[in-house]
Length: 354
Image (cartoon, rainbow, N blue to C red; front, side, top):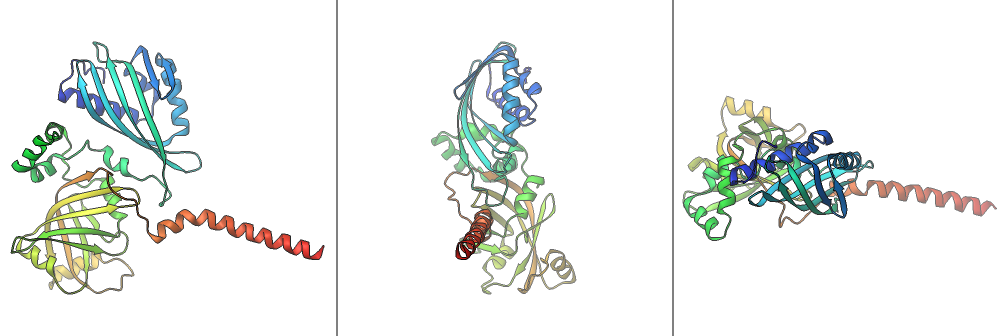
């Protein structure tokens, strides 16, 4: 990271932020400390540190209690030898309780690109943990910094770019177009997120030009990753309107929205739909994609050939929880209530015989 020296450009500032994110996600105090000058000064919340040894000691304490830590940093501004970033990270304590921390950092570098001053403010939120683990929001976004290049190619039309320019976001997305990940191949993080879903929204376009959105639901994991550029699902019989099917026979382009309301995460996927119905090949795909135990009739197999995907930020997603998620959260309380009721019953028996 120290080979990137000031004064910074949009490209080198973004690379500096990415390098810092990568280093911190190793959770290796020795490696992280090498990015700072030997006499570097820190203010972390209300704690003041001076020099690499104090920094390493601080990081050892931090990661001894912040377990399975995952960090996402985002470039906010830069000028000369200074960079401002926003960040968020998730971690859990030794009891399994998960937290998410948000904050901002101001960085100042020496001529060799080592950080000589770091000022950080942050706040921490306790997560509900409906699934007994991390929200995966950050894990899903660590791999790529913002919008993928392929998604930008497809979604950022000239008029979209005009709006970005008008509202002040064009410079940010222009950087993603140059430096972002390709965002066209499903990786382990996307596969894990997709496998946890029991439904998604699918948009298509009709022959009359009107857009249409339909909800597709099933057992958890019914939308399956066939390979890094193909998704598939067994299409269950619905209300027999066949609007999506008809639309896709006209125009195979499709947009999928996969939502995790409890963990405030969403994944957008653009692709081309392939409908398999009424043939031996279709039968083979239906049997391959059918969820074991599913009793609803399957009418066809549908493959989605992925062109691009994009992770959205959690802003404006209202957390909502399924019965299963709420039951999991309340299970320790239910066990505690059962134990107290048993103890009360025992004490009543003792009192009645005394």
